[in-house]
Image (cartoon, rainbow, N blue to C red; front, side):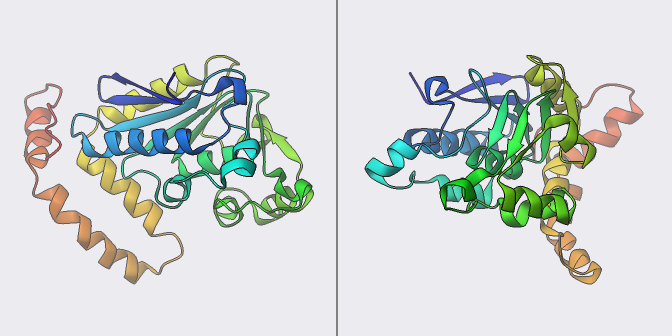
Length: 249
């Protein structure tokens, strides 16, 4: 059985972490499967947005410590945690996103979470620290004091509390996180894929830079969008009062 499953639904790619017996803990097989799924999402012009979820009781419990003890860190995992995807990625979370599981969620652009699910970085409890990006990404998503408390206490917070801090985009009833994520993804997928991709990258890459730098950064993306076939198709479809047919180029 594959550690990561993919399913196409129109312009949306559903990616499922599939080690439920290990609470979707990350080993090398899962890391490689996740990297391959993201490559599929980013390389296929017929796909606009991805949804990342976990099978079984929760989203992801972090690194597989048994595999770590036997073979070292999961190969390829750091690349995903540092680079993520070029196209928008929505995390659909049930149960929990803890340790590396929360760090996987934080590389996603939007988080949908079932009520009652738990979020935390408990690494200090076992003498480590969250080394997969949470310590510098969390302060960009929640207030500084909240990020600091989560890091130092190793405590977790509920989806409801995380939503109040702005970490969660949509709260869902238990068992419906993927359905709610699809509602969000389908709204995104109706839009021009090049504009969507560029919008994600500009928001991500403009964090912490000056407005002058941001304008220069935008210049890198504008020609690829405004001079594309889709830039012709969008206004034409609007004038003809029909849905656009996106080419992704």
